[in-house]
Length: 242
Image (tube, rainbow, N blue to C red):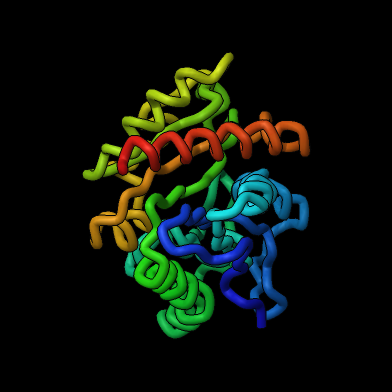
C-alpha cells in the first residue's frame, strides 16, 4: 500500500514547513477510479509543478516539505473529512465512477490516505514549531468546464482569518519583476483553506497559501525560478514576523 506522504529535507526547529496537498498524481494499485489514463497527467489529478518546486526549496537549510503521495482524485487532502468533495465523484467535467463509494469504502479511503497525512502535518507543526508554513498549490490557466474563464495571475495568495503573513507575501511578491499577483485569486482561502484552517489557524501557526499558474512551472527552468522566488519571499516574511 502507498504511504500517505513523503518528507523532503532535514527537519529544523523554527524553520519553514512546506505543505503540498496535491503533489502527486499516483493512483495506488488498490484504488480503481474507472477513468481514462489520459487524465493521469491532467490538473484534475494533481497540482503539476508543486512537488519539484518543494523539493528544490528543501535543498536550502531550514526548509522541510511534506508532500502527498496519492492523487487528489483518490482523496482531496484540502477538504474536511466529512465533506462530500473529499472524494470527488466528478471533477472539471470528468466523471469518476470509482469514487461512488459505500460509507465503508469511503471511510477506508480516508483512513488510508487522508488521516495519516494530516496527523503527520499536525505533528510536524507541534514538534518543529516552524516560523512559517507555506501551503503550496498550482492552478490551471483554463478549465474545460468553463473555457471563457480567464485566469491571468502568475501567483495567487490565499488566506482565511489569519492574514498577516499573506499580506507580507503580497507586498514582497509585488517587488519581484513581471509577476501578476492575485489576492485571493484564482481561489479564495475563505472557501478553500481546509488544511491550513485545521493545522495552522486552529493553533495560531503563521502561514500563507500560494497558487502558481501551471503553464509557468511545467519545466525545470520555471520550477527553479519560482522556487527561488518563494525562498526569497519566505525569508522576508520570517524577518517581518520576527
